[in-house]
Amino acid sequence: MSRHETTDSPPKSPGVRKFIVASLMGNALEWYDFFLYATAAAIVFGDLFFPADVDPLVGTLGAFAGFAVGFAARPIGGIIFGHIGDRISRKTALVTTLTMMGSATFLMGLLPTYENVGIIAPILLVVLRVVQGIAAGGEWGGGVLIISENSSNERRGLHSAFSQGGVTLGFVLSSAAFYLVQLLPDEQFLAWGWRLPFLLSVLLFGLGMYIRFHLPEAKEFTKTKEHGKRSIPVLEALRTHPKEILVAMGLRIAENGGSYLILSFSLVYGVHVGVDRGILLLGVTLSTLFAFGSIIFFGHLSDKIGRRKVYGFGAVALAGMAFPFFALLDSNSAPLIILAYFIGNGVCHAAMIGAQPAFFHELFSPEVRYSGMALGHELAAVFAGGLAPFIATALLLNFGNSTPVSLYAIGMAAITLIALVSSRQMGLHRGTQSEERSEAALRR
Image 1: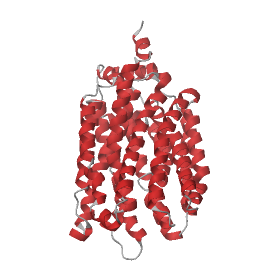
Image 2: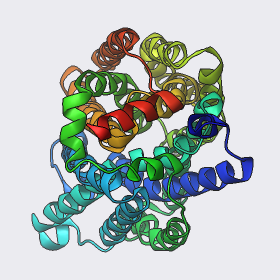
Image 3: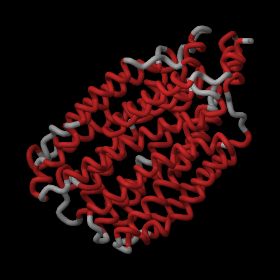
């Protein structure tokens, strides 16, 4: 049997399961920390760190500005940890990102508020958010690759979708934590209750570090290292895969921007139109639990009918749901509000994010895959998820209704569909083909 035949044959199930569990749990713990800010920005940070005397939406706008700054830092993390992941070790990159994220999140729970120290409070909050952003920028690509580079071609969509499942579990944990603490009387919640989810992250950090220190290196990456390594992988990725990076960015616009409209801005909008905060958090939490299963389903479906078809369905569904989603929130009916979250989060967003890991993996050859994926993924996050809640809140503040926000969501879906059409001109790098390209490039 030739070497390529051996590489392309499916790995043994126990080995794949080991990587899936490591990625799933590590991502859940890391993204719990990152999403805490998103939830807190919508619910409490505006009052405590960005107070405004005229309109509560103005304070929330300030909190979401800090949210956007964290996203602006993510490409920096993508470059730094893409370099580490491609040159040194996927494992080293993942351990470092978790350390940075856990430390910043814990310290957020100890911060004084604006009432205590004035302008220093929001400055410290934004600095810690930048640290979170850098860590998150290096996390996603590594979390995907430890599964996708150890999976067979035939089941890569299914297996790598579990990495996105870890992201959803992180959001569930953060939303559930805030749902529980907001049950406290408002005075206690504002005084100290909001800090508990941040401080408890230290326990999750310890578990995450144990998992990642026992993480084996990805097989495909190990084979690439045996033939040498690029001095600056991010520059090599820009030189050899510029179109793929742009396509990856375009694919992210509807997925990432739409998700933060659904999961973060909707909390602001719901409270603005008089919906009980607990119902909104419950809808987010239940729909994200449902999304865990639907993401795995759509990843599996992408193995059967193709990545582009599944991704395209998600983008079209998001555009179709743009107006009904807010109409359901306006109803102030708990069942209808929860239905809105189930469709928007568990179907529209899940279809895109379920197909995304395998799709992005196959856009790039292995020697620059971490850097290429991180660049496309994180550069888009600045303009998509990072700005979406800020822009949507500004539109609501200016127009007083959800119509411009719905049109904004449709515009993001259109950009993603254009990128999807452009990707048809690109060959996807699967298994043996990508290895041959990598080895040929490394011999030059």
